[in-house]
Image (cartoon, rainbow, N blue to C red):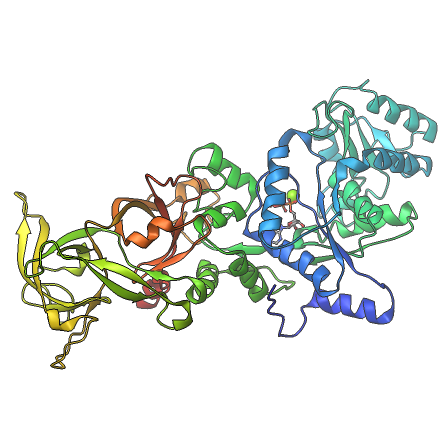
Length: 560
Ligand code: ATP
Ligand code: MG
């Protein structure tokens, strides 16, 4: 697989290189730890490319670990989709597939050990009281009245918690650290809570579940992870990560390093919000092609390489930053520009009758699959008396610089002939429904033997041979750069009502009848397209526009 690491190492790769050089580690082990409570999105792709990328560069392994300690929101549907997405992106965890829930017994034992060391206690404050006791950024917290229970009492109570003797919310196990710590996370955080909810893997075995901060460091430790990479919002949690491992004197102590999360404008990037879009039917599902989920991008037609290149290109830093949606779109353009064969497809067809072309005649004309890459070969496209052109390639009262069809003007049909528009046919309401044109039989291939200049070249398809298809054009799902900007308003108010446009009667060149789900094409002048993997059938093909040929948004902003 290609990598684009031809620039200086980012700060995480620098740390790793130094650790290997100094002998601190002989081998680097990373992990990607998703919670199976939703589908993966482009932000996760950044973390996947980082963790699996580092493993690959160091001939090592990256573990896939499901961080499944919150049974209410998690499911095997999500577990399966996450595995599919990581594989699709081109990464493999080999035999290193883990679940935090596999460690529930060990985690319980570690909690018992903390109690035995006098470093954890069962607390009966309810969540409201706990919040009040916690203090604020400027005021220290207050110690819980249950804080100084004996080890024996705590062991007995924790055992009762495990046996289901207490109701949810009535008590919790807390680490005994420092209620006056300037880092609020260290003010006796809850490490186990009661939750009488079945778990998708452990069923009804447990009614207490460990909290993230307790689970994560110990899972990393059990798997001998060397570098535990996470996003910046966990910076304050690092103290707790280290406290748990230090207090338990574990044989290995992974290093947590934080990096900036990926934010992209014109979208939202939290699973909770993406779930709302799905559940409230703003989109057709997690894999809606407008969603920046991995499955949405896949269905839209993005290639794994384009996403990897995007992630490599944005780099890894310490400071949070916003990436323009256009950067992601350019990544897929760059990739498809090289690899996608060119075809002719008319999105909004207008019929053209070439009046001087013999009625029964059909010619096969040669068309290049990629004008810049002749090695990609050519194909034959049929040409006859009736063809379709794009509606907006005709203009009745055309300005002088309109180099396409208008009565009396001549244009080149790509790979075919020069034609001249002679007559416009309209329906009763005055809509243009057909053009009558003549062709110059001497111009086969598109150039005139007398050397006359014809500026415009337009695409077309033969009417009787065309493949009729539905085309879906996508725009950004949100009409503002930051849908979360207005605290008074719900982000869903900014959903772009025109983000999906359906064209039901597009006409495509007949070679597209052979298109398969993994093919991607450039429809000349229209963008990149692929079959919709969910809705397309051989009888009723549906194509998605992956991306336009140029960044139309950049042009708009420049104009302003
Ligand atoms: P979300 O906020 O979207 O719900 P999350 O962080 O809760 O995401 P997890 O399943 O816990 O989702 O994330 C798995 C890994 O992916 C974590 O290490 C997390 O830091 C990383 N990750 C999630 N979102 C991003 C992002 N936008 N940029 C970079 N890494 C991310
Ligand atoms: Mg999370």
